[in-house]
Image (cartoon, rainbow, N blue to C red; front, side):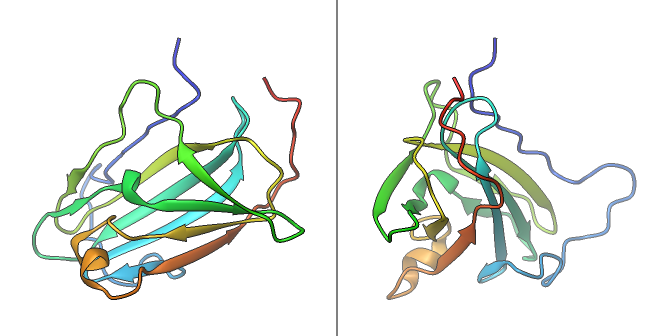
Length: 152
């Protein structure tokens, strides 16, 4: 049986794909040629915040990407901040290469499962461009569904 972590790194290469171009993910954070976007929701299988990542590479070459290096912080309605960690009991999250001109998607569950209003994502270490910047690029995502602590 699969764990609560649903890793789906699917490159959009079916049929005759058109190459990924800057701006194909309009809300995305840009790290050089790499664009990242994330939607947040509460985990459907286990308690926690699930980030559904979209990633695009507009470079002419493959680039390294490590979503496990992102620092995720849950922000409660009262402003309380809690660091979240990826739920990865099988050690499946690791750095990989995103081929030139492609995009992909990845869903990662972050724990602990706490009531959260929004999620702050520090992209430090996700890609080489993020490591080279003096301040980590940041993203904020608001959760679109209510908290359900009764999930198993």
